[in-house]
Length: 318
Image (cartoon, rainbow, N blue to C red; front, side):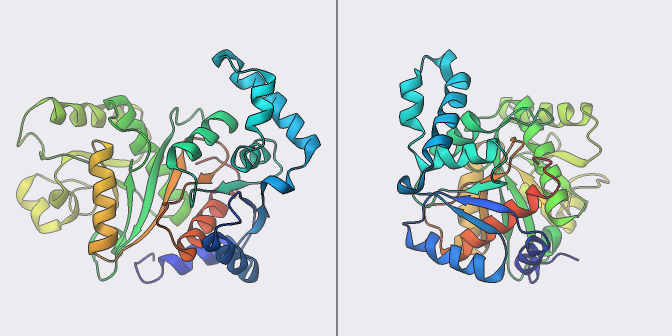
């Protein structure tokens, strides 16, 4: 059983069962260097350390040609592509694209937008998801809600104002993710300031439409909405605010209506509830990759690497 007390150990031990090749393109950052030493010592992953001085020239040429073919419709030249592939982040992403690594972890120095662009421009999109988004694993101490204090928050890092269709896909992608990583039953709550029509307006309607679309996709996951956060998490509140629901009062996947809400909430949870926030973990590509908060520490990097290893098991891309 996953709880807030064993979630981190579970992730690291599961990664150790089959360590994978994970690219780290920021080895000069002391937090990354410390994390790499720990990962190697504990055999959580097989670090592939990339710096500007370590790029293989033949591979760089091959990667640049592939990058050019993918990006030439945007007007870049082969010379532009060759210049771009001097960036360890893009080079590392192309290692994953060509099967020479199993995933990458970056973002200690790179911005989220840079990491997301590397994923979009270099990796293969997952056709079962159809968009790129992100999530956080949140491990909240002394909490009985969710999966005994373990949650997934999405999207907290990529899509500022998702449409109803995008929200539906974020919900399904997040459910697939938590099911793969933790082997638990996802219970997906689409959050709002309204519970089942208690308020009105276009923002409420957007979430209601997202739930309808997600259900029409016949994903097989338990999902409900629109729900206020207390109705999603607290059984007593759920019983008061709505009729029987397989999600309300016991949600472990929280889908936020926009990036403002998601990003603010994950940071408040992390700081005020002293939670562990693992991510942003990028969803929507066949090859797994993880962003990092630039305020991360070495243990955050270790945890992101462990999750990236688990996601590469079976190479499903989820």
